[in-house]
Structures are given as C-alpha cells and as structure tokens.
View 1 (cartoon, rainbow, N blue to C red):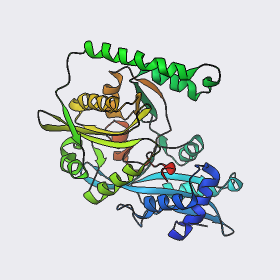
View 2: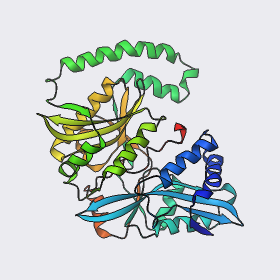
View 3: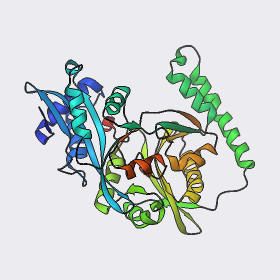
View 4: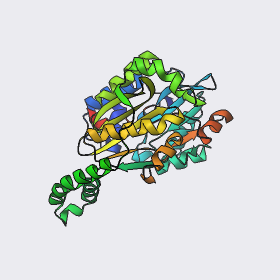
Length: 356
C-alpha cells in the first residue's frame, strides 16, 4: 500500500533510513530533522506529500520530497524535489520501489527534480522518462591552496598509511602562502567590488533584478527564505553557512552562498548575477572562501557558471546525477537551453543528517 507520509510514520521512516544509510545520527535527532524538512517548510504542499509504502503493515520504503515554487516566463509552477528515496533491503527486487517512484514522479507537480541521485535511482527515473541533466551532473573544483588540497586528497584515499602526510601538510602551509603571494603580485589589482552579509529581505528585494534573465527561476517569498536560512545555518557537516551580497560602485550585482570550513573544502550552493556580472560575483565568492581559510572551492556546474568556472582552470569531474522529469516542454526547454536558475540551495543537496 502506498499513501501519503504522515507524522506518525516518522519513527518507522527514520529507523529504516538509519538501517540503510547508517548516518550515525540518533533516532530523536533524525525525527527532528525529517519533521523540519517535511512538515515545517512554509512551502510544504498537501497536494504533493511525501510517500510511504507498506507491505503487511511493515514499512517497505519511502520517498520524501519538498515543494519549490518557481516562475517560468511569469507562469507560477511547482517543482517536487526529491530528498530521500529508500527501499528496505528485503523489499528490493520486487515492484514496490518502482511503484513508489512512479507514484512520486506521476504527481500533479509541473516537474520533479533531484540533485543527489545514485545509479539505481537514475535507472528508475530513466524507465519513467526522467532524464539526466548533463552539465549539472558535473562538479567543478577551484583549488586555492594546491599543496594542502592534494595532501588531503591523498590522505583521504588511504595513502597516509604509507607516507608522512602530517609532515606534508606542514610543508604545504608555507608553500601555499608563497604561491598566494606570487598570484597577488601578478594580479592587475583588486576587483572594484565589495560585499556584505546577504539577508532574506535583501535576497527578496533584489531577486527579480538579478534573476530575471532566467526563464525558469525561484519564486521566493520572505517566510520561505527566513525558514531556509535558519535551516542552512543549522547545518554542521559541510562547514559554516555564509551568504554575501556583492556590490559594484554601491549597486548590487549579485550574491553567493556557500559552506566554508577553514583548512577544508568549501561548497558553493548558489551564485546569482546577471550573465555579464557572473565572473565578478564568482571571483568575489572565491576571494571570500579563500579569506576564510578554505583550501578549495567546489560546486555544481550549473549552465550560467560555465564561463566563469572554465576561465579559472577548475577541475571538472562527474558528480551525483542531477535528474529532471517533466511533461511540460517549456520547462524541459529552459533546462536544456541553460535558462534555468535552480541551484543546490534551491534543491535539497545541502540537507545534512549529521547536523543533529
């Protein structure tokens, strides 16, 4: 039986989630997180609920989602964004998972989107006429402190058991400082921009001006942005949430949002500007995370960012599949033409079950 997920389902849902995913979080903490995501979101929509599947009164799987409001050529639409799709190990190989996915993708939403899929989910979406967005399924990395970055990457791959990477990191500090000095001495001068903290009210006030070029873009309102910023500030696993409004000669030209942890990898989750100003706003993002001590900056290759990213000799690699299913040709056309502004901040890739 497949039906809407209700509050009373949360204990069974989070127990199954932890049994499959093994996040290490407490049952109580996961229940608080799932409740916040599914029942406290100001945009949660009773017509687009999350779903559970029961077999013989035992939870066999669930598909959680959020609703995001967007504008497409001034038409107000709803995008269902997948959060978690989990099927109990003993229920795999049966039709339940496919039926659950089909029910989710076949709802009344105008499009369904996920930016954290795995290979199995991608195969299910493909069978249901969903498709991978090629550019958005790539990740870029801008290395800021090369020696520290590569020492950490090698250590993550287990090489620390064979080589003295503690010493390598100590050597990396003066090496990267010297390289940073070389880059600065060779620069043409600091960009004529300044930045300040980005608030939900400022984001709403400047949104139409800075996002209006995109055919498909978020349709923000203040209650949603205030809730979203509070959730982002509570995230712990990716670093500290930071958002900055960028100005040139006093006028706003864009904003950027990221997670930053000193000595580690920063995660870009949104960069917004008119196309002509995107390189300057991207540069401001890079300068900000570098000043906060990040060794590198990583993000999803959203089409508007291609030029800014490729100008800076970034590393490109495959990321998690970004999937879209829609029967609206205008939605699909905007996505494939690079006219969609729908970043990681707008979907659910930032949700961190470790924060509790």
